[in-house]
Image 1 (cartoon, rainbow, N blue to C red):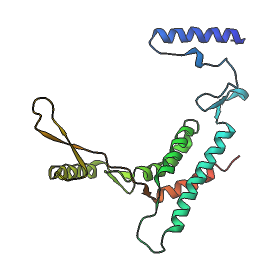
Image 2 (image 1 turned 30 degrees about the vertical axis):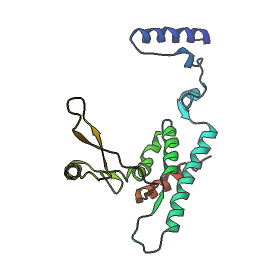
Image 3 (image 1 turned 120 degrees about the horizontal axis):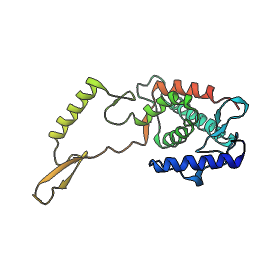
Image 4 (image 1 turned 135 degrees about the vertical axis):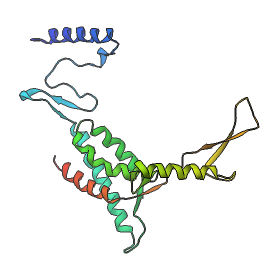
Length: 210
């Protein structure tokens, strides 16, 4: 529209049509029409200059750079503390990795080009889980073989096993005891894989701009 009022009326009509079709649009969460609107879901959009661009606030960008540097420092410190020539995997604390990943996932909603470089971090965070090898989730034949091995282990499970708990069956037979698998507890530290080191190098370069 040629005015703020006309544009707003057009949006209200659009919202009403969407509502009639079962699509909820909350007007209270909408901004007035603008080529430079307020931040929405952490993203600043700009349609001036004949093109659409999306950025994050300066504060959020600075925190992104801080998170990448913190990640790099965690791995650097772990590598420095490792014994020369040792065959043991380098390990880093899991808790700060979860915090860093939680924030960076929020950032990639605006900068999707960062997504491939979070794979190494994801591998390290989840690499301790059953069904993973060198940080990568098993697929195909390897995954099926792993599942069969787990099933066989569960069948051979004894009462004293620490990976199972027991609960009573329902009303039909209260004396029957049914084994239930328990999710293994997350470790305090996790292994570092080379993919993370390569991704950190790329992220440091990509976030070096002011």
